[in-house]
Image (cartoon, rainbow over all chains, first blue to last red; front, side, top):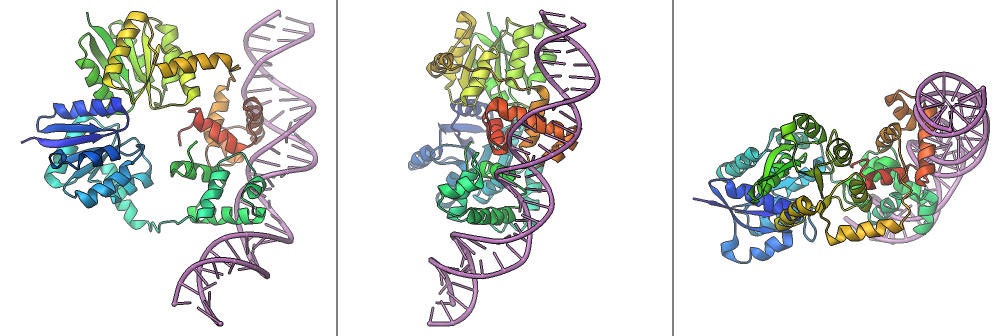
Length: 211
Length: 211
DNA sequence: GAAAAAAAGGGGTAAAACCCCCATGCATTT
DNA sequence: AAATGCATGGGGGTTTTACCCCTTTTTTTC
């Protein structure tokens, strides 16, 4: 019996290429390919389009992998999602796993590993490499007390990803430079940053700012 | 007669998947696959390993696509390089084309386009989509007074994209802090930057640093 | 309506970053 | 022999950041 697989990735070439790989696996068949989460949800409205496994990229336009996975887990909990990403960022991986992904593959895995992952997800319900397992265990010890950034702080961070000085940012936000410094200090404290460079990198890595 | 193709990409899954696609094209065959530029150069030491076309990713460890393409153009000008990238950054594309790439494909192209590109590169010696052609024409009007960064300066920039202070960077590079400040000042001058934030953004936007 | 929390603003200090201008040594060019 | 380029390092100054600890005002919450 052939297990039905759907691949979701915005890069057409990779989408088709990975689809081709999966089609070559004996006990798997590709139902169809999608370019983003929205397209997938559209397809799933028809019952016979419901696959056993979804291979899902994380960075996609319209509806990204994390959001899509969350929705799938609510509406179609029987579908197993395997994340497929170049993203090696710890937080992103954890977000994806929290969203309900049953496996996480770096895009630099060999096709044998992909096959193994597909089989294990079907049989055991999950597949995790050593790297990911360690990450999961590590995440338990850390108290990930979801750092909440205020609306105004986020606005400040966006301006901080710029050549402006804090004085200039203050003018732009109609605030006193001292208030801006206050934002900065509390953000540094919350996020454990040492200086503005760290802040910029944090902003970029967490999607608050796109360079 | 089968044209020999080599694929270079650090993400094994994509590497194998794209290799699979190309193998399916009638008049093309995949010689071998490489994970980075260094591996490719190593392979090319044996004459029968010399392909007609190289499909090359840009962002790779050890030796990136731009540098590898430059070297290929010097030592093996008969090899045609087609860049294959998610990078939509204008400057990066131009750098790759200046390095001697005969074609540039975004990773979201369909496999028919890939086939077309391979065929055209063999027949006409080049392949460019409309988007790239427009970019090329546009680049002629701009005076891109090619700012050249020294080897050591690039190394410094990578360290500058970090929470380290200049003093710490100096230690890491076995140089006096004053020398580091010298690098910084001349880079700011050359690239018209106001502060380290600007430098970090420049580095990221031009592929010198990946966050 | 009082208490608590948050946002906004402030003073002072030390370190880091920025911005000049200059010196040496060494290789290449002319 | 002089000039040029470049990597390396230095002196001395100003501006900007970072990091303390503190007050006032506004908003939320009970």
